[in-house]
Image (tube, rainbow, N blue to C red; front, side, top):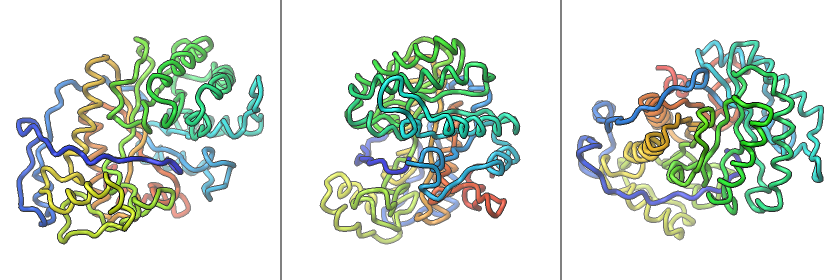
Amino acid sequence: MRYRLLFAFALPVLLDCGQILIPRRPAGIAASGREWSRVERPPVTAKAEPIPGFMRGINLGNDLDAPYEGAWGVSRGKRDFEMAAAAGLDHVRLPVRFSAHAGRNAPYTIDPQFFARVDRAIEQALLHRLSIIVDLHHYEEIMKEPERHGARFLGIWSQIAERYKQQPPSVAFELLNEPSAALDSSKLNALMSRAIDVVRARNPTRLVFVDCYFWANAEYLHQLVLPADREVVPSFHMYQPILFTHQGADWMSAEFQTRGVVFPGPPPAPLQPVVAAQHTAWAKTWFENYNKLPLEQNPSGPVTVFLHFDKAEQYAARTHKRMYLGEFGAIDNADAPSRIRYIKLVREEAERHGFGWAYWDDGGKNKGMDVAAGKWVPEIEAALFN
């Protein structure tokens, strides 16, 4: 998730009141705990089939996906796997920046020492009876120049597929994290089709996850074209409303720097956004609606979450695919009660829909496991397990 540039939308406030039932209250009055607990959720009309071994997980981010190991101050080890297993999770998602450790020219050889580091992570997962997703993360160059990097991408996957072809089914692959920019849906579909063929040549039945376009935003799932292969599973990420989940994040641009955004809105008193947000059309509109619209229409409210899950449900129903939520979370710049409400809601929606999920733990602003202290961050523990 780190160092991506995201765009948010001023979410439409149109509601099908026959499906999304939320108690009405006047604008400008913050939701009480009692009122929040009475929120009625839209029915799930087509629950997805489960993905055994990949239903409740955590990301081990900002280590092997950093520009170089240790660059972001996070080092993953045995204790991460111990804590994940002890919490009752069934898998970890391992973001890996293979592109920073592969040759620039054919055959694009991956550094053996780096490959060995990935091997050890897989060994730790299996030792602790956890499934693991090897996720090709932060290939930033391919987002800007997909044609130029296509052959290299496939060459990297050829090596990964060969190296892990004897691993058990509990080791899965994720082809490319959060496709964006010039790698639009049309180009992405063509590239993923070729990558699936590369993987299938050596791993005919291995589970493969595929993210949709626009940083894996569910709004773009309908453009994702996948083969009928049951072991190819679509994936999306959930960070909407992003002006709440990414408020004040130092890796985001200026319009994201307003702090004090609560979930759900509206706030008890209008919040003045930073100047950059006031001069960015979509952010300006979002804050205007956030400050004035009631809970059932507020862009920083449950309707945003429900609408994104509805997109994922529609895709799963249409394609008869299982579905995976590969990342979600809310930065610790947000207040703890809002974080708990948001993360818990997203987690519960994934479970209601039958989707597997993995919380985004980056060891920093979205940390879930405090490995040094041997305990979970209280609000994340409350949201994921209580």
